[in-house]
Image 1 (tube, rainbow, N blue to C red):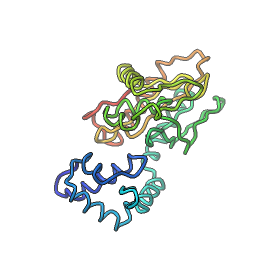
Image 2: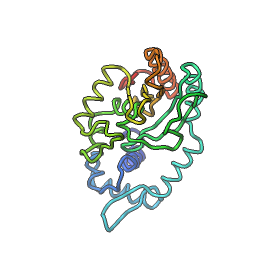
Image 3: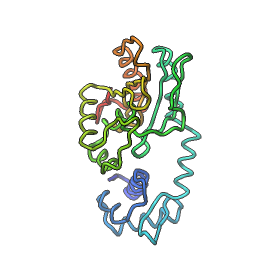
Image 4: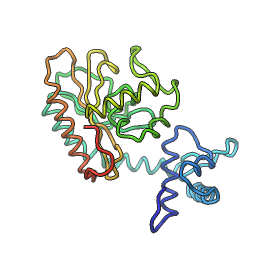
Length: 260
């Protein structure tokens, strides 16, 4: 919960952030409980947000969701695309250095959304592209991001077995399995995906952290598994690219350490 010289503004932003992280509208009581706010303050802030168009009240469900003004902010972010602008030249260098396709993905609920794709001529075609969403648990980028999140947030994203999606009959299918995979990812220092998205293709990825230590994105490289590759060199290049972008976003090594 935000505090400081403008607590009301901080609390309003915290409410918007919470609404954005939930896939469906949220009850005011839930918002108050999760943020540790008094119910009276929560209702007052929600009223202001609704009046300004940043939130919408669904009286029949007694819940609140994001409003049109919040969508407009998101659209403005997409137009300005600061993360993409910073990442693109770094991913271009990463693709040139490794000779393999490079990607930048951000977490979008339980999925990852690909926002930068750097393709290398002659490399295999991929299902990923800018604007494509895939289950986070099936991708190296997603696993790298999830491994850098607090356990409680991971649990909120995947509350039950129905939250898990598989392709080709592979991939984690429970929170227990996911926790095991994320633990291995942290111990390894980078995320790995082998054939979960496309048989015959594998990826390695590292998380990009912002100034607060929150995973803002995942950097990944995808390569054919049948080729005789120096995967250690790929991992080193991916980790270096992620660290460089993290530093550009203001990360200075405090808070959670990046996976990679």
